[in-house]
Length: 392
Image (cartoon, rainbow, N blue to C red; front, top):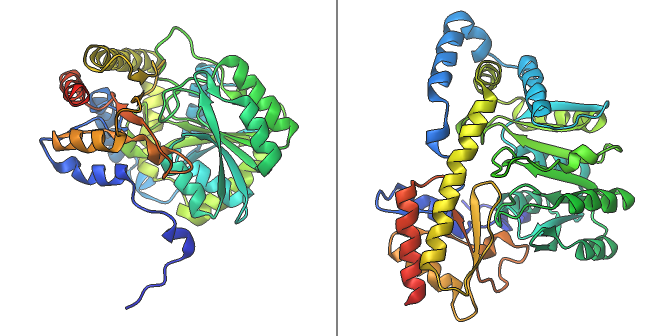
């Protein structure tokens, strides 16, 4: 049979990251290409106990359909948790539960964007979200990144030239670069967008994984006009397989997102919601987050030390202040794709940086390396292998 696929889905092609994920079953592969939280951070005992308790006391409830907005006790517990971490809720803000934070841009696109509309995005940015927008026929306008966040002059130019309806941003420990947007730029991004009637979709999957003493306030904390849609992940701090996240926005926006979600998946799986509620209520989350931050900070230090010891001095890297990724840029004398292939031949995987850009075919010298998943020993070995390749 001949299949006539839509033009939209034909525009979404497998990336180098997808191909590398297919190779993950190779037991000899040392992968710095993933973006998974470390299994060592999962509260497995607490999840096991909560599951047993719920199956013994209320099995039907956790195995039955739920409501689209999310399990009410989880919504309450999540709100209290986010407030405890310094998040501001406006008087008209509401929270719903989503199937991973990746669902939020999909729902937002359905509710606010028409075919051919423009979304401004950090360039580079998280490739799956870019593909989400592309799958809706949305045009992307890239805003170059600086060491402290997006170039605001370029943001102004993009808004003037393309009139985007929405800006997508990851201000905390940006994926893929690890950049943290400065406090000053967060305020200015909000001011620029609200002045030009541009909605802000703020993605905060890594916000709790900060390495300093305090975290910067979210752009949502400046929101007084209901113009920020915030995606918050619970998966990254509990367990990603639960696929439980939250979206916070003005109640008028939330009402429409609920309608879109109802058409997408009816509701986020009930069992995962109950487990997350039990974890948030019964686990000492402050201590859990403290341990998680320390663990990832140590992993990041191992990778930083390995890069400094093994890579040529003119290789540039961004020092992450949190999150899970390090962005490395090679000098022009190297061919980035050749280095990626040579590393893969040596059973070491990294992600070629071009997949994160609006124009994936443009020349790119950068790679993304993940330190959250591999062990410290594997990080040291993998970075040493790449260093040997670079030093030829």
